[in-house]
Image (tube, rainbow, N blue to C red; front, side, top):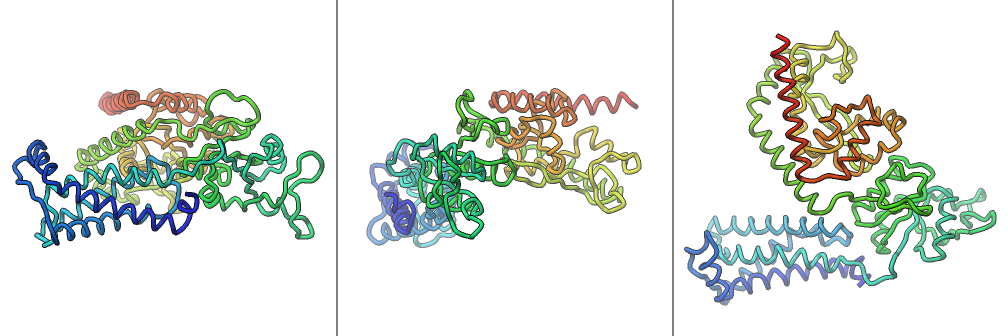
Length: 470
């Protein structure tokens, strides 16, 4: 099974499995009894006559379906251990695409088209059996209770873990400099007494984390870094998240991560996924509905703002900033420009009386400058509700003021959040992180709705205050 998961046997096996399942789905959906049930009791299809294919027509329909479905699932033939939920959702998306492709052939009266009832039934069957197939073949083989990998650049921490692991770990990843002596020879990583670490146990450098997680079916990664830096430390956590691998971190760095349970012992469990699968699905559905609906409703407002900024003639319509995303990665966030460009040509956000404009002040007071971030929500960079993303270039200052600041990096940033509706801004990092962590620990659909309602009410209050000032 291990060879199947990591080589060409897996690629061939997964593709053959999809082909067989596609053929079987058409064969089952073509059965006269099922055709009769479907066209009798399923709404929208009960006016159709059962259509049972035979001979060459049936073979052609099977081959066509297998070709479309197999072709749409090519990315899943790569032996990479995605998280099970991602596998299922990706497979279902591609099956829907294949079904739409087959329906398009039917629309243009292609000679080998599938009957509508057969197509819908076969697609429904494939939406269940294909994801189940990929989940099954991607399961790691039976192994010891825990297959641990040590990853880091701190010799003392690695030695400590090796001593506690008592030989039950698979090996370690570390920079080559830690196992190369001054004369260029590879020796023991540490040999000053106590626990020694053989260079032969090194499985590669830190850049090989993805390959090693796949090759050895790793269950748990033990982090042994000298610093909880943005690249290696959080990069390793990101790899664990993508591959569904548990992670543990030294208690000295526990303030930088979300942890599960009590901090007992030298290492604590990292809560890489603080929310349940259902929470992710519901939250993403809410994000898509809210952002898509808001962009549609506000499209006349967006057009008016674009025209107004152009007529003002003080610079570009939008300005962008780099903000921090999940696990310390960055993305670009956009807003409508509210300040004149500075003399060096940069738009910026620092308030300067000489750079303010009446239109910009209005956009900020009414929060209309935030509208472009709805697009970031739609494409998945942000959520409607979550910790407000901080400017990456000044985030070090927030981390210095609040030890737990990086724990915000474990969830997607939001347009608004618990901190925003309680008027906790980045000028008060300690108060803000308390609200953000409270939200992360208690997130729910009902809480998101309450926060959005509160935020809309605050926006209406700000708009009403403009009239009071007049």
